[in-house]
Amino acid sequence: MSKDSKKTCSIVGCDKPSKKSFATVRIAESINKSGLRVKDASTRKAYLCQDHWKIVKKAYKKDTKAERMRWGH
Image (cartoon, rainbow, N blue to C red):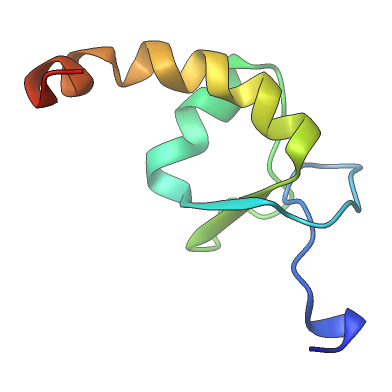
């Protein structure tokens, strides 16, 4: 895999390599609550680097709490 084909973080102003990817419709609300902005909100996938995932994870956990309760977690 060449360096050009490696995905980078989808957050505005960040060019770090991505560690996680999510469907944009699923994670966009949590990203906005974290005070961050996605470079291109019309893409299907949002890629997050390690640092931005740590920030977004807190809001994402709150947003999905009801869903996780149904799973028994």
